[in-house]
Length: 162
Image (cartoon, rainbow, N blue to C red):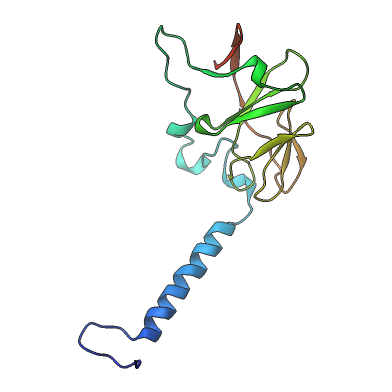
């Protein structure tokens, strides 16, 4: 095969490969971002975009009977640990016996979902930020802003968004 044009409207292999390489580089650069935590308001929303909440940040739909669907059972949340509910973008924690907290499960550094709760911290494996299970504060960077707190209610054994 040669790099010559074979007819009107066709590109050379070299031009095609160069274009594909440029697209690949732009995707990698976009994924790295600026690292500017101030670009978002802690909820995943850009202040310049009006700060309107995204549909994924809204409370769960009410279950039959008019009450909100349970995020988790109290028994599912270990003391000093937590449980990530990716579909709700929430992490529920139990810092001390009987005390339950909830936070956004989206890291404030580059908006990756957090991936684990271990050793008293909520952990993001994208860039290794760590947040307190007690108050969502930053325990290890590169994140500089805490996880946004979510309001919850404990109803019997159920933990629900408020």
